[in-house]
Every structure is written in structure tokens, then in C-alpha cells.
Length: 262
Image (cartoon, rainbow, N blue to C red; front, side):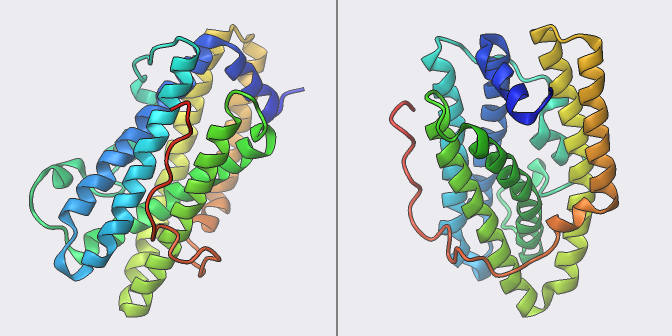
């Protein structure tokens, strides 16, 4: 019977599929680290109080990239080139979601509106990251090889999600509610489509690496399309709600160090 646990177990048990999974994850996390570092450097004077939190966010993402690379090294594996069709972060940027890399590479200060766009994009993508890590934590929190990494990354993603809720609520209270809701909706609808496309691409690559029969690949693809249909119709709404988190000032302290294996 196909299940999330059995599929991921199959992926981590095989060196080549594990290497591909970790390479994709490490690339995305490292890209997020770079983006947050650039945003922290370009924050407008009116929002300088956010700099330590954005910097912490970027440091966490960098740490996650190092963790995935360390998991590969433990097996004596080297990263592989990430297929462009599996690059979630870059596909979102291509679709105009979040802040364009051209803007981040420039030395012009960002605007208050830019910060709201950044936080809205993060609120949507961190929802996805948090949910994915909750699923992995459910099944692999005690796994001898990846359990420590799963627990740490899951906790960090929950912190990132809490931070975006709190900061967006602050901006909403300051009169930016309509912009926030419009931006969140745009980001969420784009994200569910990119997530579908990336999921299909990743499963296709995994299927070739692991030699899945066509019937198994077809069932998985059908499941991905079904998830997208639900998310496009209703599920995206969970990504645009805002509520004060239980974890207040979740990124107010220094980043936690990576596990010893990293």
C-alpha cells in the first residue's frame, strides 16, 4: 500500500534517491538563506527592528542547507545538480512571487511594501515547509539517521511561520490589511501550482532512479493532481489566514546550532 511513510522510506533507503532528495532540499534552503541575507541588508530605516529576525531566518535556512549536505556526507555521497524543474524557490521567483532577485542584487533600500511582499511570500511558503516537516516528524522523528535533523528543521520552520504571522498582523494593524490579503492570495494560488509541478517533477525523477513501474508512477501523479485540485479550490485559504501565534517573538534570539553531524 502506498503511503507517505513508505514512499519516503524507499527514498532514504536508496543512496541515489537520497542524494537527489538532499541535493534538492539543500539547494532550496541555501537559496532561502541568501535571499533573507540580502533582504536584511536592504531593509528600510523604518523597519530596522526587523533586521535581527530576518537575519536569524536566513541563518536558519543556511543551517538547513548544511544539514542536508552533512546527511549526504555521512553516506559518502556528493550533491548532484538540481534539475531546474524541481527548483521550487526559483520557479516561484520566475512566476513573480516574492521579491525579484534583480531587486535583491541591487544596493537600493527596499520599501515598506517590499517588506510586506517578502513577509507574505514567506507566510505562504513557510506554511508548506511546516506542514511537510510535521509529516516527516510524525514518521521519522526517531529515525537513527535523519531523526535529529527532522526534529530541528521542523522546529525552525514552525518558528518561521509564527514570525510571519506576528509581523504581518503588525503591518495589518498599521493599515496595510488590504495589501496583505491581496498579496497572500496571489502568493498562495501561485504556490499551489508550483508545488504541484515540482512534486510531479520530483516523483518522476525518483521513479526513474528507483525503477518504479508505470502503474505506481501513475497513481502517485494522480494523487498529486488530486491534492492540487483541492488546494486550488479550497486548500489555499489556509495559507492566507492570520492569527497571533502561540510562539511570540519566535525569531527574537540567536539561531540554534546545527546538530553535531553537520
